[in-house]
Length: 247
Image 1: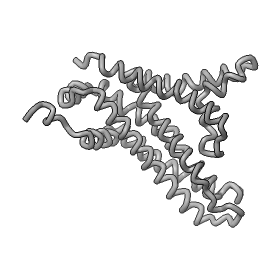
Image 2: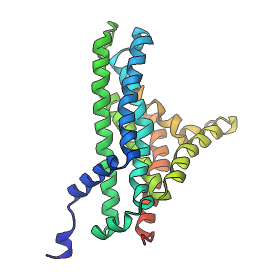
Image 3: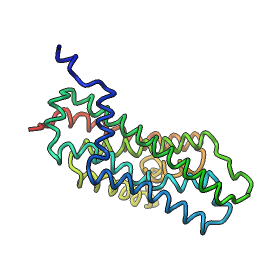
Image 4: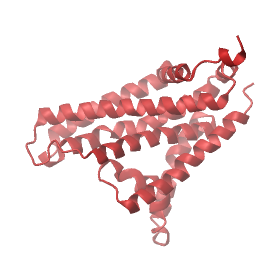
């Protein structure tokens, strides 16, 4: 058998990367926390919110919040654990093509984001049915808004993987992932920089993605911001992973 034939298939690589998200205690508890927090958030909205805030669209916006915050952390750990747990030598010995491994991590992250969206949608629908607010548009959910919600979760995970690949260490990747956007948002509050903020601030450009349908200007803001915070880190991460010594 030739070396090329002995390589694990891409589907196998992706399945392995999905398994890695729950193989560590941190990954397991993060994913479990997403499910628990989703339920808690919906229960609180069902008990305390006004009927107008208990529609399917509003419930879904609440349900995806835990995944939006915590899934990127899972993406970071999916990359950095290879280096902090010193398994990168084994991984890249079995699969010398490091680019294939990182692509498999990206695909695994996207599949995980779709699973999170499915969980959020089902949970939101159940909560809406139980509460039955009886207001106009209770079950209204534009397909465009559902697509934006899926994109919001997926881009967050990809950003996390990108930051993890750039830093190759969990602590600095987590600090940079959360602190850098906050710092940019703070700078954007300066009056002289206010017009620039929507083009570079992740929170301002993509935050409303789960709440309202974007117009052309908002898509331009989101596209520019994601190119800066998602595409560049992923490309830089590919470069670093392929050139960093695993010994």
